[in-house]
Structure formats: structure tokens, C-alpha cells
Image 1: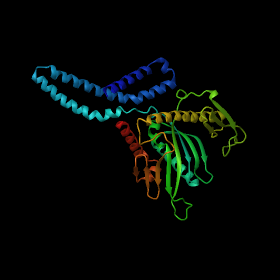
Image 2: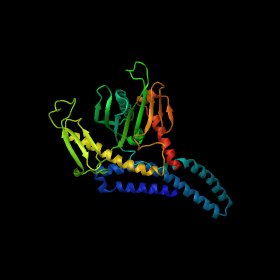
Image 3: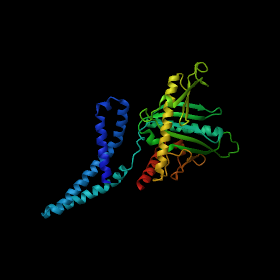
Image 4: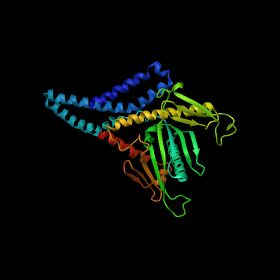
Length: 353
């Protein structure tokens, strides 16, 4: 444990040294990335330094007891040792949490994708509920929203919403939302009062920079076409809509929300970069799963993670067997308690390993 704490301090010192280099300062993208790494580790390093200094002080006092012949000095050292051991014990839990490997992506902004699943119109309405739930939560956190794509359903609700959220620790707060969300409620069109079950899928992707995922022009195929649907005079007159195909992975991203072809390409590239990065993360999570089985999955988006039961006013997270009877608050954006519990359970799993 002591070695790991020393490694944290050494890593922090190395990052601080990197930040002072002129070539790093002059490259804003690299500087921003390293600054985020420094912010993520600094508090850990400070706590590690404090703990290590107390351990060193304890060793010095124990050496005094072994080497000193003056009884008064020995008694004083023994008293100080008792106090010091109490302090060290009180810091133990904090130090254990420091040793949990932090996710370097936690500080990143995200691209979130919400899609209606089984359940027809009711599923589209539920997808819209989830969209608004995350937007309201984002407002409370003072995160900035950038809409990438919104595909509305003819009968109400949405088929698909893709948007970016930018702010502090966005991925760290929302990464556990990836998966299948299920709703149980009586639709307004249901005259017999029968409860219907519908679903929507949520994907939370860390937004990445060019330096994280490099895409060459030869890696992609770009098609332009005329935008469809409401969108002003440019619709059906200019080929502003963009479709990007990543040749090796087969991933396809489209964007037609902007009137400018350049802006649509820029947004589509952001989504493509995030999806490619997410594929890499999924592979890493799969490899780690053999050594640590976490109850809180952040990699399998086909897994049913949560049920929103409207008749009973409850929300159940199936990964940790948690039920909260505050559905109205949660669906209106109050996700703080839920996210806090999910983080605690994930940390417990990491600590036990």
C-alpha cells in the first residue's frame, strides 16, 4: 500500500513538471488534457503525502523507543505513538479509496444517445421522458447542452436523440446510465387500464479529442445528401446533410440538423470519434471483467439496468437491487441519490478486489 501511495505522489509530481514545459503550454489541446489529469490526481496526492508523513513520523518514534535510554523521553514517545496510531487508523478508509484506480474519462464531457425500443408510441414517449430527465439534471449541474440530432416520432415522443453535455465530471456522474431502461405504466390511449411495458436504450459516450482518437481521411467515406423534414429554405435545395462511414468498423453517423455542411460534418465527426473510443473502452472493460466482476456495469448496453414503475411510484435499479419510491422526483431530473449509491457500490466492488 505504501508503494502505491508513493507512486501516486510521484505521478502527481511528474504531471506538474509536464505542465511547466513550454512545448506543453503552447499546445492548448495537450495542455488541457494534462491539466485534467493533474486535477484528478492532486487531491489524492495531497492525502497520500499526509498519510506517508504520519507513517514516517511513527517509524521515527518507534526508533526513539528502541534506541533511547531516557525513560521520560520513551514515555513521551509512547504517548505520541498512541495518538499517531489513532490518526492513521482514522485515515485508513480514505487511503483505501485513494487506491481505487480512478477512471481517466470521468472528467470528460459526454455524448448521450437515447433511442426508443420495444413498445411503439409508448416507447417513443418514454424515450422523450428520459431525454427531458437528463436535460433537467444537466440544468441543476449547470452543464451546457449541444443537440447533435433529434428524430421525433410521428405519434409523439422521439425515436432518437443524440446530444452533448459539457461541464464538470459529466462522464463520472452519468456513465452508469448506459443500458436498457424499462417503463411500466398505463398509456393514455389504454381504456381498460392495462399496464404496458416499454423500453428505451441509453448510451453514454465520453467525448474525445483528436489526440485521443485520430481519424484519417482515408479511414472514412463521406456522403452528402439533401436534408429532410422541417429545417428552413435549405431543405431539398442544398446537400447539407452528412453521412460518414468508418470503413474498418462499419460505423455510420449521420447529421442534418445544421444548415451548414461544415457544421454537420463537425458534429458527425464528434459522434464518430466518441463511438470509436467507446468500442475501445468496451474491449478494456471486457478484459477487466475476468479479474473484477462489478455489479455496476458500464459496458454492456444490452443489459436491463432499471425499471420505472409508474403505478407504484418506484424506480428499481436491477444491478444493485435498489428500489427508491421517488419516481416523480427522479423522472423530473433528481438523480443525485441514485448516482451517489451507484458510485458507492462500484467503489465497494473495486475495494473488495
